[in-house]
Image (cartoon, rainbow, N blue to C red; front, side):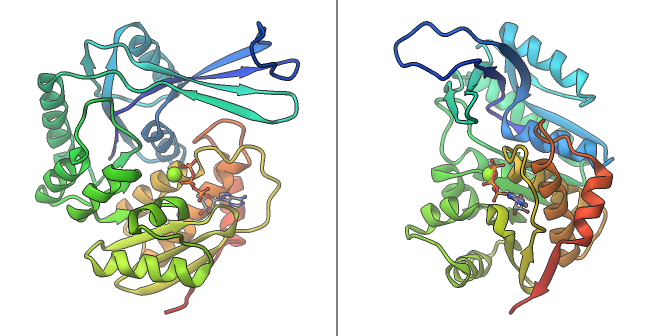
Length: 310
Ligand SMILES: Nc1ncnc2c1ncn2[C@@H]1O[C@H](COP(=O)(O)OP(=O)(O)OP(=O)(O)O)[C@@H](O)[C@H]1O
Ligand SMILES: [Mg+2]
């Protein structure tokens, strides 16, 4: 079983407009689609699509929290959320006919110390039967920057592998607790190291540097350019096949879910990378985040090249 932790869940609302957005005007929405959101829930859908058992945990609250649970049940994802007093946030993505999108992300409302304690204990409990635990995305307002550091230490103390996919201070603190894997993109690893990271040589140096700090597997994702991975087996470069992208949102989250599956199945690091990249590329070919066609992903796997470069 894979356990995905989403502390900052949301109802993601996709507003499709029939005409371009006009600042300061009343705007009617042509269609509105609600989705159970938060990066860990994208990862959870990817795990389920890969055919592995998943349990999603995190905070939900209020009426929007109930809606989120209903939406997740429709996606076929079992959950063990902690129910908090504060309402689950909504995030709105406004899509114009041109394809331009504008996002409004509410901050997650505060949770109490008792609710946080309950969630930490829930994660301890789920970790005992999980093969891999993933920590994804941001945290509700008021939660400390070392939240993931504390959780990573607890899961590692239970002897379970974990993947951390977050950014900013949460990543900087979290990495000190040595998660089994981190999966920053180039912006996130650049921010972490306090320097601009671009081009394969700089990405490789950055990945190696984090691996030398004690993170077993460092995967830097490069969008359509593929990914670089530093681990005990060496340095690897993954290249994705060229595809006509439909919706790239959540490709990194899909990659994390697929890595968790590949680790649970005992794949070698190089095979994990190829598998995770092919599922992430398949996500780009599907309109809904974390859902993809497994046979399309298998075809993409044949076109995904992973080579050892160091
Ligand atoms: N245009 C693309 N063509 C093929 N594969 C892609 C493309 N974009 C993304 N991917 C696949 O998805 C992986 C993750 O993408 P990306 O680096 O954009 O993640 P991210 O920035 O963490 O995204 P998010 O946080 O929105 O999920 C890439 O390493 C690659 O395997
Ligand atoms: Mg990401």
